[in-house]
Image 1 (cartoon, helix red, strand yellow):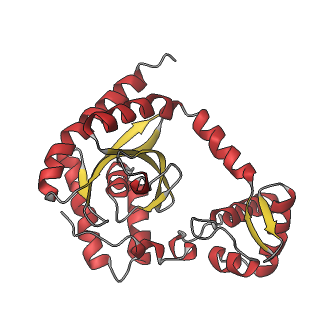
Image 2 (image 1 turned 60 degrees about the horizontal axis):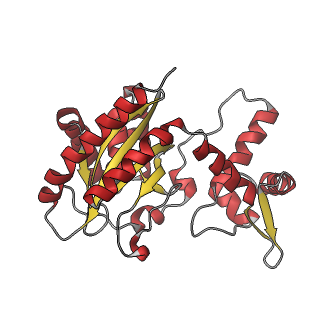
Length: 277
């Protein structure tokens, strides 16, 4: 199994570094282009970056400061950003949280998967997660952390993890359409140029593992072993994982978790297909 990677490897990269090239598509109308740019502004806010000024937003999005200034004023007026009066910087407004709640409440995928994930986490005292891709990252739709210590239940719904380092991301790449996978691998090779001689073979090995075994394993955080598998529901591709924090050998943990993971995938898929049209 690949050697663990420090979590701050990905955190050290800016959102501009991670943004796939040519995010603005040719031929967009001015109104659609403004909408896309406004979404880029909202994407710039991450944990640890709760307050951002126009200069920082320009650096993170690659947009000009004049464009950012115009868009932040529009987003404040629309209720998506708030101004911090002390620093004259911006933060996300509660409206954004309400959108996330509406998404979760209306997700039939979560309605089927979440109870099964919770039952598996409790029965086996493990962590279980379901994530979807967003550009070159994976976003947790559901994260059930089994740990008696609340301070260690740190992964929550909405949290992002790097696609190239995690079992979730590598499992998604294995299940993605060939054209999509090729484009993502090329982008990741570009943004991870220095690490690619090591990362590239690890990702390809994970893709091969999914093809032959149905799952892949990774350990990008110290003493955390995770296994993941791609899963397709509602016409979309996701990744399902299980993980534990342990001092046991990776091989021992993988041998224990992999059958549980594949069984959970089978159960979720079966229950999903049984939903009446």
